[in-house]
Image 1 (cartoon, helix red, strand yellow):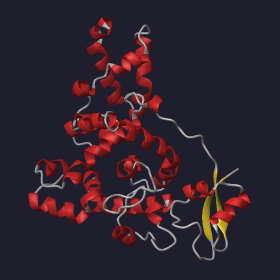
Image 2: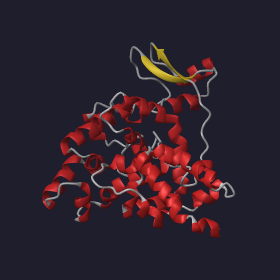
Image 3: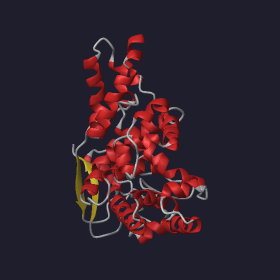
Amino acid sequence: MKKIHLFKNFFISIIVIFLVFYHQNLFSWELSGFLVEIEPEFTENELLGYFDLDKDYIYLPEIGNKNIFEAISDLSICRNEDVRKFINIYLTRNRGFVIRSIERSYLYIDVIEEILKENPDIPPDMALLPFLESGFNPFAVSRSKAVGLWQFMGPTARILGLKNDKWVDERRDIRKSTVAAVRHLRGLNLKFNSWELALAGYNGGGNYVAKMLAQTNTKDLWSLRDTDVLYRETHEFVPRFAALAVIYRNQKLFGIEDEVSKPVPEKIITVTVNRQTDLAALSKRLDIPLSRIRFLNPELKLDTTPPVASYELYMPLK
């Protein structure tokens, strides 16, 4: 390890060069291999383990005027003390939550990213907001009764057109809730012209954040946070989101890649039923476990489809 110490500044310089001139994914997945070529007698794990976030963040690019997503991409967001704090928390005492959430994300992330691609004004990394909101669990219910991947409260869901009745709660519908989240985030960004403030507004409410900005005569989230007037959850929301996004996009760098089990890809098809259908009978007829049908259609409250002329169900292709 003495030899590694002699090369510390050289290794850090290489990290900075790659961070500045290349995409974050190259850093995440290719940097270790580059270092191995320089010092082949050391293992990849030894070299990756040498990067100490608590000390080496000072070698990362400056944040400057970047928005949060640019700063996440090149890891300069790690210069923020609170982001580093939450990265350490999520990698230690909340590690189990992080691993389980990443594993669940692979069930839904393709659908979410597909919808975001259809809305190019929304930053692609906004697909990771359910990581913080629900741990990518469509059945999640918060203490304040927010529901679904995107954790919509009842009034907000109604404004965004999500149905919640005896039969369905569309806050748990992956596609419909994601489309609603896109609309909501777009509206918040138009209100504040800032994705950082839009994220804070997503948590605390747009009117609340606007009121706090006016009360403190501040213009941006980081200045607003310095005034210490926000509710704790809203105060911490953006640094927590940034920390989880950095971890998600750099699983190898942070040493969790081998702990995450990716589900076996499954082909899902859409089946339209033309009348109210009992799911147990459908399960028996198609030889598909009822639990699997319920899992793929989390918006259904009962073991039956709503009494409508037609309804689309997601089903596994056998």
